[in-house]
Amino acid sequence: MSPDAQSETTQIRDSGLGESSLAQSFSGPRLLLNEEGLAFPRPRRNFFARWPWFWFILPGFLAFLFIFVYPTLRAFYLSLYDWPGYGPINKFVWFDNFVDVAHSAKFRQAAGNSAKLFIVIFILQNTISLGLAMMLNRRSRMTHIYRVIIFLPQIMSAVATGIIWILMFDPIIGVINPFLKNHGLGQFAHQWQSEPFWAMKVVYLVQFWQWNGMAVVLYLAGLQNVPEDLRNAAELDGASKWRVFRDVTFPMLAPAFTIVTALSFILIFRAFDLIYILGGSAGQPDGHTLVLGVQIYSDAFSTSGFSSATRLSYAISEGITLFVFLAGISWLLIKVLGKREEAIH
Image (cartoon, rainbow, N blue to C red; front, top):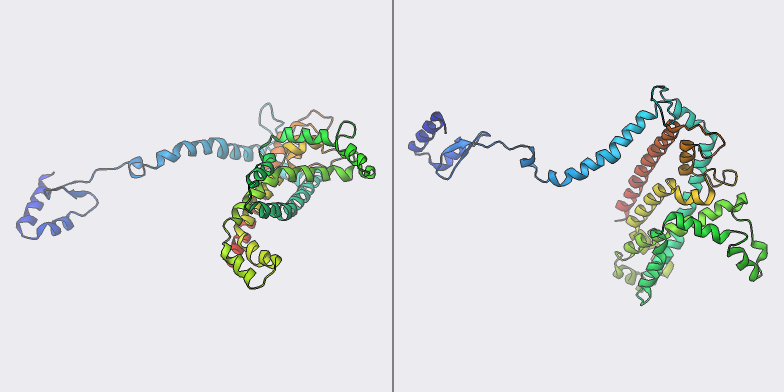
């Protein structure tokens, strides 16, 4: 301790002010008191000493910067150039790629197909998936087996799922058309993946079959949090099963409804692999199964036409447009549905 601080400590002690006054005198940011009442400089603490928990999040934070933040910023940078995906990046075009995206008929067609797909899946998940969740919420010895069966498509590879359904709907070696003909329903047999009307219906069916398990599990988790006393009280008051569901059960499922809606919106608009297997890079037939994920892939690698010229910067612009759209609508959905949850609870 410096001579000045020691002399000041001695003067305060000799004056009879006591240890409390001594502590108050040296309660500044630079001095501390030891057990003997002597002041000594406060040790300097570096960043990691002040926040030791930062070591735990540092690896994940660095991985997030390297895997997500840097590629995203790099994508915004490349979208301002006319770059085919190879060679030097030197032709700066400002926002011309985004203008081309806004005027692209194929992009609008793919966006429309993605929107229709989301609407269909949204309706099916809030009817069939919710009904299955309510059935599985009952106590039964077979409940766990049924849950595994329903959730199984969720963990299957999308490529394997697409190939299985292609083989099933094949008009020559498939099982759908022979099954219909053997049961007197031959008039309903079709060239499922070649007819424009039925091609997208097949996509609806297969996409719902794959993502049904996710909605069932989320709704089942929400149903298990609904108090049984509320439903029993409503039934004792004479409410029908429909009114119990409408006025008690479904409002209590508001958090699960929010999660299912937001996740379905993001996943459906980002769908690629399964639909690519079913309809190809051009969305056969005649673009009726073309969605945004397939459209971006086709433009990036020129797999939808006879030209071999790639337009990677243009495809990146399409991806950024989709990213901004998904971020904005997802934020709006969560905000609106979150207010609904607050109003109910």
